[in-house]
Length: 296
Image 1 (cartoon, helix red, strand yellow):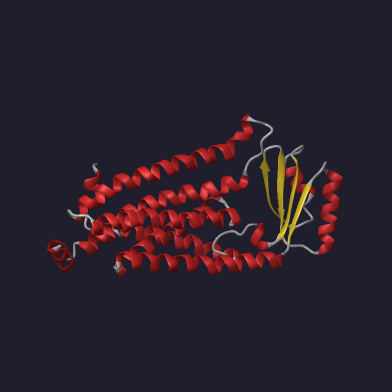
Image 2 (cartoon, rainbow, N blue to C red; image 1 turned 60 degrees about the vertical axis):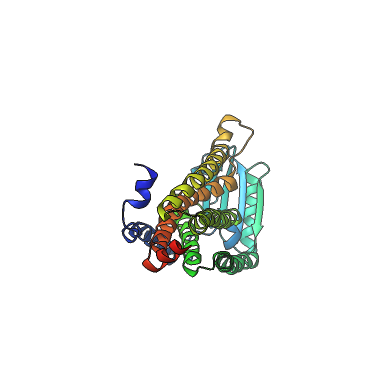
């Protein structure tokens, strides 16, 4: 099937049912997680507070978990030659006992504690800056195009990317950390780039709307393809390099960020070239708008 067929074969309103369904599924996933945990996605230690203990992997994960069974162990994962254990909030007495146990059982454990006050501050910053970024984005796009519907489509497409990426975190078990927040913010910027490319081609160039969308599609998919290739390389390095080079450990922060990015980029392809493109196709082909475009 050629790009022209993908763009123009079906009525815009009919095609738009697909992204609406995906957004609803993402909202259901986020809502279910919120009801279960109090947050749309599972929060990492930076946001919940707690203690992170890294010990040599001389024993199995099950055996290590048994050693710390009397403490609020939230998660345990293998990071190459070491086990990383995440504990929830605990009293100063429990923390001291945990540190004593870790030093007694393992050689040179790494122990890092993060208090809840710092964690609450981070949560407040995320709640404050994410909506602000969308608001500023909408204002900038409106100032560039002077078209409220175009600005709305860009914001909706970017929001759909973030919702899909966040829902993918629940599916893959990736927690919200400083790294994954950065990945989500990166996705907002990337989504704006591709959506502005599309909007600029459709509003500023001559020709039929469908032909202009197809022309923008070639450039946009090339951009996204190169970015996805780079992200896949990072996924391979962060997840599997330690299996080849024993001196390396699994790079969890990079692995989590790239997981969010790959799902977000896949969502961006769909939302830019289906959600936004079909929305522009409907808007620009309305009788009044089409007549105005012909007078130009």
